[in-house]
Image 1 (tube, rainbow, N blue to C red):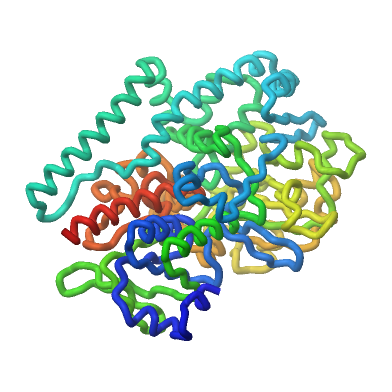
Image 2: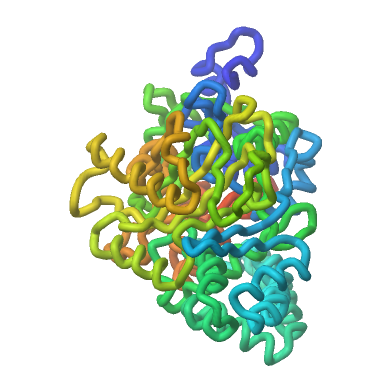
Length: 551
């Protein structure tokens, strides 16, 4: 559809070739689209080049089974920066967020369950089923994490104060020192506002294992495992690993319409996020092209970027190139299963004869998360080269709130399963029988909590680590260490790969050693999830360099 946006019948190739663009964006994922929107709003001529037939990258909706529309990779929205939603007017461009009735549901095999939501009194009652002490402690835990959101917001929305490289004029050096002074002054104000005790607690969360943090706060294994599920999402990191507690913070700093730690569904699936961003970008003047694969970046004789070479041999010239592709080339840890079912899953612990949607159906359902030991065992299996014998799963049922993505009476179920090695030692993801056995293992585990789930399956879409890499370019760190290999954040979210260290030391500010080439994807600061901060921040850096170049 994007090719038809070019007027006067001029061919795609001719349109690209016949002008020198100010900026080209490689990859039409949400960060690339956001970068293009800000650049076009800043007056630059911009073209987005997307390899696939559809825009959105990991934030995409596809109808793979007739009548069922799947959010194939990302599946919930919370991290998208409020500044992006506001500045690009995404709600005017069709973004509609659907808030769940409850936030978290953990069924237990013994017939109990933990259902958390927005009512503090109800949460207290639910947690009291497992521990009265934890019920009283839980609000203080949430308040503790909320204290750190302001400083995290500041860091997320700011480009890192990276050192400049190359020959610089006195004016450039002076301006750079002033910008860094302003950044560190603001950062210091946030730090001082915390006070010493809160600052020590903040550092404790950043540096400690998830187990240490949660054992300090809670005694109930069900509550600890439910909360810990946030710290393992999309990672091969053990909950016992130092620094794993940071991702707890990463997942509570999101929001929906000003409400913190609220993960929403998106009407029409996650592709609607990308569609709204693309509308904002095209309105600003950006051109977006699909089925347009880049084979390499062209470097001129001066060592500066000169554009890109497409796989069909077309040379497209530009002054700037922004890469939304990941900086590394391996992926392991996660398998996503999108399932079409003919009825709503019924959990035996809820003992309801009603087939209507309940609050628990709208929540994130934690399967295999009854204890920290279960999570640890699932992770250890993968470290031993095997898919988890009892996978840890996040189940969401977006059709419980969104009636546009499935036929009446039928439902879409999203399963985010862990842990799955990129190259399992007992088989291959290329083997259809091996793939089927893993899917059935997951379905059978769900049957233990929701009898009859397996028989309700109409069809499914299985995306193993190699599939995610091949289809969407989702990759992780190029390293031999499993704990830092591959996650949904385009690279590990450990402390050694954050802020001034992301993606590598010395190049955290979106610029690269090649003049005119920038990174704008989740592999750059502040990291992954459907956040948009890397695209927004990178665009501001490019606009700054463009103005300097134009002087």
